[in-house]
Image (cartoon, rainbow, N blue to C red; front, side, top):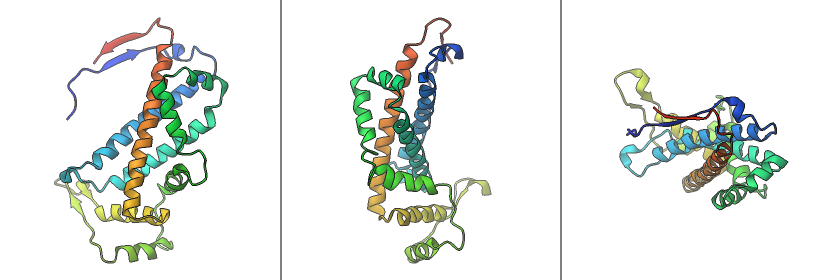
Length: 226
C-alpha cells in the first residue's frame, strides 16, 4: 500500500550541481544512479521473497539476475573510481556508518579470487540476458534436472497478457544453478548475500550523495511538496 504522506522535493539548477569543476559531481551522479537502481531492485527482490506463501513469486529468478547485474556494475564502478584524488578526499569526509558499509562492500570483491562478485554476481551478470539457444549443451543437463518436476502456467487476470510462464522461471533458476554449480540451498544463500550487499551499497550511496548535496551552494535551491 502506497504511503499518503506528501513527497518532499528539492529543486536546483544543474549549474549548482556542477559548480564544482572537478570530477566529483560526475562521480556523484553515477553513484546516485546506483542508489536508484539498487534501491528499487532490492526492494522488489525482498518483496518477491517474502515469508507469506500467498506472496510467493516465480519472478525471483529475474530480479535475482537483475540485482546481480546492478551489483556487479556498482562494485566495478567503486573499484575503478574510489582512488581518484577528489573522490578519495570526499569519501574520507563521510561518517562512520558509511565507512563501515564501504569496508563491507569491498570485502565482496577484495581479494578478487573466489570473491562473491567473481564467483556469483559476475557469471550471472554475463549471462543474465542470454537466452539459451536450442542446441546449447546446457539443455541436456536442464532436461535431466527437471525430468521428475512439474511446471506451472499462471493467469493472474482475465486476458492472455496476464499470463506468467512459471515453468520458464524454473528453467532460468536451474540454468543459474548449473552455471554456478550450486544447489537450492546455495542459491538461497547467495540471494540473501546479494540483498545484504545491495543494501550496503545503497546506504553508502545515499549517504554520499546527500552529503554532497548538503554542501552545494544554497542559492536558487527550493523546497516543496507534491
